[in-house]
Amino acid sequence: MVVTVVGAGSWGTALAIVLGRNGNAVRLVGRESEALESLVSRRENLRYLPGFVLPEEVEVADLSHGLPSADMTVVAVPSSAVNELLPHTCRSEVLVLASKGLAPGGESLLSDQVAAACQGSRIVVLSGPNLAVELAQGVPTVAVAASTDEQAACLARDAFHCRTYRVYTGSDVRGVEVAGAMKNVMAIAAGMSDGLGFGDNTKGAVLARGLSEMARIGLPLGAKLETFLGIAGVGDLFATANSRLSRNYRVGYGLGQGKGLEAILAGIGQVAEGVTTTALALQLGKKLGVELPITGVVQGVMNGELDPRASVWQLMERAPKHEGFSPSVHV
Image (cartoon, rainbow, N blue to C red; front, side, top):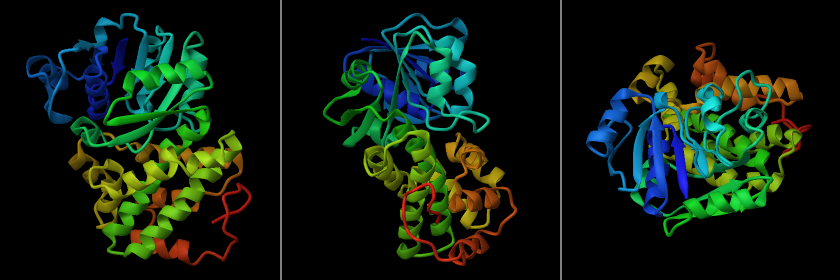
């Protein structure tokens, strides 16, 4: 296949490497001159994913030169940039959305935004416990390619699937997308717990109740509960909330240690999707009439309105509730 990957950060580069290793003709398109220079001259992304040489099947291009048509386009940019890039990405029959976040404004999902703008493309959402460095290393990894068009999901699966990257297909686009976006928020919460020095009991509670919160916002949008119990839900949540490779976990860990958000992000040097997603999720939750307590305290700590340790006790001292995933049942 001829595949265009839009986004030359760590995630886009890792996906391009996998696609190239699989024998696809790949165009990796970016717009940051520093990263593109090293990709062209060294065949390595020195800024975002050092240590991995691009396969010879991967060609590097500048977005300013436009995008030629391809069999499949993979969008792997920060969620905040997806809308801006839509005019460039709607030329492929199959469009794979690998960005993990919510649409700006907190009114919809990214796939809704993409589908409205690219009506001639079949949309696939790719998500799972996929840390870019491990994917490029060839560490055994799995993901889900979800689409309402089964053939499109299979095309995406076949492009990526290999011995080290096992890709399943699915039809629950909304569940896979919500899980991929919301797990970043919960990873910040989990990192905060570790940064505060709390133990495994606390971490287990954060992950369990965080999963409930993820499902609670997804179900009213048409997601299926079982999706949150699978690869895109529990799998991605566990990986992102426990790994120091995760930018979102590192944001939370820094917050728990009392550092300011700006300083933490400056140290990471890349986008941590959960920072933006948290505020958007609260807007979407308000629209849906869904309570999101963990998301709320994460936002309060990031804004400097809540002390990290006090935020934990704020959650612990809530009135006892019935456990459940239903939108009508609160944490």
